Length: 211
Image (tube, rainbow, N blue to C red; front, side, top):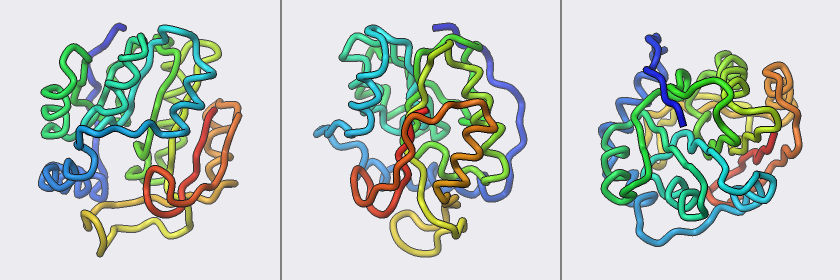
């Protein structure tokens, strides 16, 4: 899998604040998502049934690399990407032999048309909604013809900085199904699945997508 140098980019205040909080609270994040015990997300299992064997896959926003490792154990060529350095370092220590890189979701250092699929579990939820169509368009350019993107985004209408709950201070964008469908279509994706779910891999209401 060819990887190119990351591009220069600017960062909005909300995104910058969110990145700082993940750096600061990485240990807290790992208490939930860095545990040795691993449960396969149902959406990931469904997505894999639609992909070729030994696929070239990107785990976008990989965190501690649990999904990346699982994808690799199935014989796929898996690459994990996350912006938070402490999480990438932790993942590298737990996932030897599987490449995990530090990079920005909006500017992915992977060559055009080099992927069979992209897994984006909760990877786009911290981006301002006005920027997401452009990001989705860039992701579309990274996959080969017939390539598939699967992932989850937060459901709802009130995008805002979290003031309470788990790891407050993060910006979270919330999507209605119809609005997300429009963004996906404008970015050139064909929708195969777009369903609102509750309390599956994560608490609350989410939209599961395969496109």
